[in-house]
Amino acid sequence: MEVHLQCVARPDLAPMTVRTHAGATADSLLGAFWHECGIAYDPALALYTRSNRPLRPGASLNALGVRSGDTLYLRRQRAPLLFLANWGLLAVVCGVVALLGLLLASMAYGLTGGRVPFVHGVVVDAGSSHTEATLYRWQGAKYLGTGRAVQVDHAESDGGISTMEPRRTAEDLARAVSGLLGGIRAPVYLGATAGMRVLNLTQPAQADAILMAAECALKPYGLRRAVILSGHDEGVFAWLSTNYLVEVIPQDSGHTEDTFGALDLGGASTQVAFPVSSDASSEDITELTLYGRKYRVFAVSYLCYGVNEIRRRFLAHIIAQQEYRDTIVSPCHNSGYTFNLTAKDIFESYCTITPQTESWLQQHPDAVFTFVGNGSANECHSAVADLMNPATCKKSYSTCLEPPKVPVPTGQKYMAFSAFYYTLKALNATGMPLDTFLNNSNLMCSATWEEAQTLPSAPTVGFHLFVLLLCLFVGLLMLAAAFLVLARKQSRAKLHPPM
Image 1: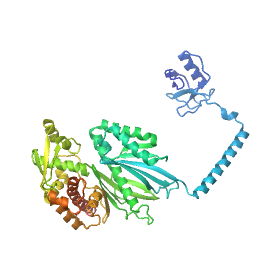
Image 2: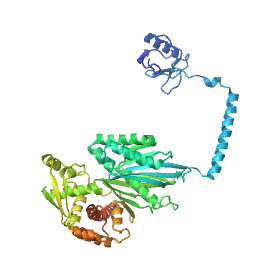
Image 3: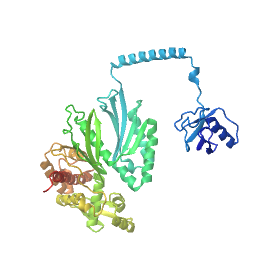
């Protein structure tokens, strides 16, 4: 039989293979090893198995369970200190330590009124348009196995980390997290979203550099993990956060039908998530156990359908429609408003690059487009609908808006947030009926630039971007309704196929 020997204690000695037999002892293997190495026997070393079990020196290889082809390791022998211990003295010491521990536990109980102290944690949401760090706390004694998190404080910085230099990313993150923690020791978790997903697809080396800079900056503050979240995970987290904040989770009734679906309109992607029945099957379904109850959540993310990237696609769309002219008429900007953008700003993006645009950009690297608004709400909605139509989208792009592959629950209610909320909040329209909102938005989108600025609900900061966002938002809102209707029709067709 052949046994492989490797000296872990002496890395300078090369591994070797010894030919022997099952009746040979562990001592004979050691002797053969030292003889082949040409060095003196070292009594401090012994043979160990891969699982770190020592081999008795005088026992046969067969009795020790060593088989041909096995690898044994030479390691330093364990010092038998436990056999030399004074067990009586050790017992006395252990008793004293136990009494001190009991005394300290009693003092802690009295000082806290019997409550388990709070545990803290920091979550850094590194989005495509801004970064937000939030400090949470929850009691160490979790409720039904899950902590009830309460927000303590938060800090924001403008700009997504995907658009920053690694050094600035590190400085901004360190400043935000250090300000939150103060003297608190807490684990820090960073999750980057769609902006970094896009960058990771186009410039993976740059994405790695930014993530490494973030890790280096936050490690002194207790960083546990820094990752680029998948779109699916982002959707699941959106669903969980929504239902936790509206206090649907944790539930006392034991029914999951009351949970809300989530519509998250971000900067570079849109997430849709909703609960599904136990018989639904899809790779996009995640099972969660929260507060002792199980939930099944379908979540999907649509990359390039956040407000920043869909705006970029819209501009690319009307440029192509108007054959790459220097002056482009935009139906989604108010009449009387003009602005300039370079071709690189529009086409050097994962969400807008195509073989045609890439070829055109190589031929016109310094091109600048002038956009002139004509304030046509109907044409704007039509253009946005083209971007949302999967059949039209697939003619140019690989990331398109597809209906979910599982039945949408009938009567499901949804919470829409992020850019959905910001737009409605700016108009003071969060409680406005849908028809009224659509009429008001059409009025603002169709107004001239001067008229739009005088409307009572017009925000004062970044107004031209707001109007475009509003017009695109209406298109997205209408499409979200169409999206759910289409999904429901597909669900009914699957449940009731034609005879």
